[in-house]
Image: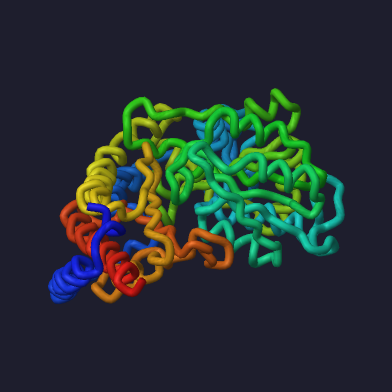
Length: 425
C-alpha cells in the first residue's frame, strides 16, 4: 500500500489514526538515548576478565626488557605492535600504538600537517583554501576534526561499494588544495558499506596533485562482523604496494569497541617515512602512553586469533539487535514504500533514508516521545543533508526488548512524518 497512491481522504484518516498511536506511545514515557554507537553493558561485561589479567606478581617487563611501569617506549610495547600488525597484516615496525583513542591519532596527524607540514611541504596553515573530502553519509566526528582546522569540507556521494571514485579522482588529481579524504572501508559509518576491491585499488592508484595529500583510512570496524564468512576487502596496504603509494595512507584502528570504549588501545599504521616524522612530533607531546594497558590487552588476547574469538562473542550479542531493526523496517515501512535502508554484515550502524524532507521531523518526533537519535544532518558536513533524508540508527546499546519498543516508535514516527507531508501537499 504505497502511501503516495492514497487519496487525501484516506490519508487524513490514516493521519488521525497514526497520531493517536503516537500519543499512546508518548504516554509510555520511554527514555532511551541512541545518538551514539555505544557498546551495551552486556558487551562491556565480555571484557571484565581482562581486569584480572595482570596481578601484583606478574612481570611488566616487555620482551625488549622495557618496564611498562616507567617512562618511554613512545611507539608502544613490541608485543602490542605485533598484535596490531597481525590484525592488519602489516609489518610491526610500521605500527604506532598509543592511548585509547584513534580519533586523537587522526587529530594528531592533521595537527602535524597543519603546524609543521608533511612530505617536505609547507605547513597547511601557510597554504590557502585547503579542502578535505568527506564521503556522505559519513561520520560526524571525522568532519568535526577537519572543520576544527578550518579545512573546507567537500561532500562525496557514497555508492554501494564505496565513495564515488570518479569524483574523488577528479578532486585529488586536479586540485592541489585537496589535502585528504576520510574513509571507513569496512562497515562504513553509517551506511555499513564495505569498499569493493576496485574502489580500494582506485584509492591506491590515485596520483594526487598535492604531495602532502593523505588518505585517512579509519579501519574501526575491520573485525566487527555479525555474520559468518563476511566480505573481506582487499587490504589497502597490499594495493598501495602494487602502485608504490604507501606514503599516501594513514590507517587507524582501535579496541575501543572490542574491549572498553574508554580504556581500549588505539594504533596507526603508516609507511616508515611517515612514521619517522609522526614519532618525532608525538615525542614532543608525550614521553609514552599507557603501556600497562597495552600489556593488559596483549596478555588477555594473546594473538590476533584471540581477538577474533572474542569478537564472535560480540557478534552473538549484536546480531539479534540488527535483526530486530531490519525486521521492523521490512515489516512496518517496506509495504508503505517509506524509505530505504542498508543491511550491513557488521559494524555498529544501519543507515535509513527517509522520504525526502522528513528526517528532521522524524528525529524530533522520536525525541518528543523519549528516544534520542543522532541529529538529522549529522552524517553530512556542517550538518547539512541537502535532502533532509538520512538517519543513522545505532542499535547496539539498548536491550533487544527496548529495541523492539524503540523501533515501534521509530516506524510510527516515519509514518506520521510521511503522512503529514502528503496531506499538506
